[in-house]
Length: 197
Image 1 (cartoon, helix red, strand yellow):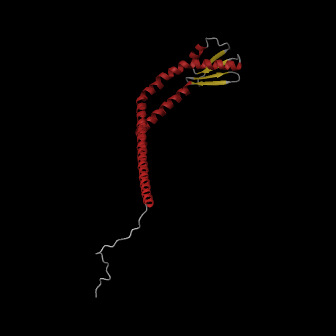
Image 2 (tube, one colour):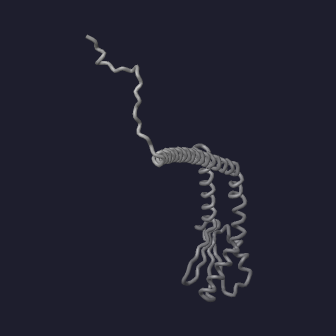
Image 3 (tube, helix red, strand yellow):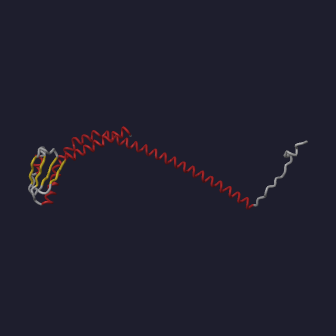
């Protein structure tokens, strides 16, 4: 018994019937294939663009961070280099400027008090160290009576102006102390920036 009837014969080609496509159907398939290719190309272009934008954004952020660090580091180094100059200004120049401007500040306050309260007597209370400078100011005519006295409890640069209803304080030493603290804080901050970035 033969098994030939169980096996398919590949020896003789048989024509396979393929359905014939009309020109309209063929054009529709071509158009659909074109649109699918176009969409795939567009999606690839968008993915590439998004990837490039992400890379550019990342590079830009890193560059900004590097620039920021470099700027702060340079600023801290400049401040560190200027530290001794700032300290000399605070220790040597500022006290002279304060001493020289104390008279001007005192005259401004006296004039303002006299304008607000009339020609009542104004008493100037100052430290013994500043008494000579204050008395030299009293040689001018203010148009109202002014007296001066020293008080041992006041420090250099401290002055009180007293009138019957009002008292004002001029504290140049406190102002200088605030400036010294600000400069010291600035120097500490620049040192901290140099150490820690």
